[in-house]
Amino acid sequence: MNSLAKKLAHLLAENASHSVLEDEIRYGLEIALGGLLQAIIIMVVALLLGIGKEVLAIITTAALYRRYSGGPHCQAYYRCTITSLVSFVVLGYVSRYIPANYLSGYIIGLAIMSLYLIHYYVPVDNPINPITDESTKRKRKIKSYWILLLVLLASTVFGEIMDKKLVAIALLLGMFWQNFTLLPWGHTYVHLWDQFFEKTEKFLKGEEVMKC
Image 1: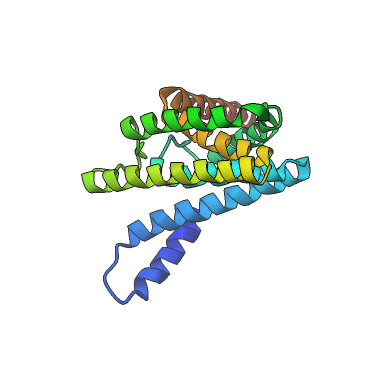
Image 2: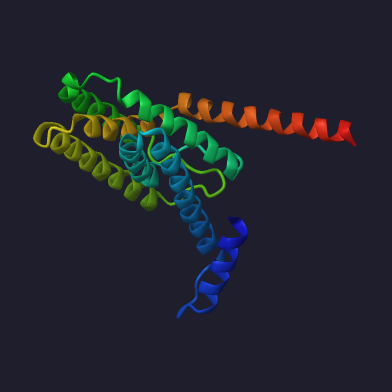
C-alpha cells in the first residue's frame, strides 16, 4: 500500500499545475487507499456471514466520525485491518441483540456522550502526523459535531419514521464504538491487539530460526 501511494503521489506531484508537497499527497493517498481496502475486506466477510446491512451501517458511521475525530492506530497496516475486521464483525452481531424499544434513549444518551467527548478529546492525534495547528483542530472539532448531528438525524429517520430500528441501532453503535476508541480504554484495546500481533510475529520468527 505504501509503495502504491508513493507512485501515485509522485505522478500527481509531477503533473500538478502548482507546487505541492509530495509527501503530504502520499500520506493522504495511503490513508484513503488503505481505508478503502479495509472496508472492502470487512464488507465481503460481513456479507458472507449474513450481517452485511448491520456492518455497513456501523462502519459508515464510524469511518465518517473517525475522519475528523481521529483515534488510535495499530503499528502496521495488516494489524489495523485484522483488528477492524474482528471488531466490526462482532459489533454487527451485537447490534442484533440490542433491544430496539429504547431507541429514543439510545439517541439521547449517545448525543450527551458524544458532545462531551468531542468537546474534550477531539481530535485525537496520529503520532505519525500530529495536528499542531489550532485552526485545524477547531475545524475538525466542528465537523465532528456535524457528523454527530447527521448520525442522530439518520438514526431518528430510520428508527422512528421508516421503522428500520436495526439499521438505526447499527448507526448509533458505530458512533458509540468510535467514541470508545477516543478514550484511554479504546487506546488500551488497540494497544493490546498490537502486543498480540507483536508476540505472534516474534513466536513465528523464533520457529523459523529453529527450523533453520
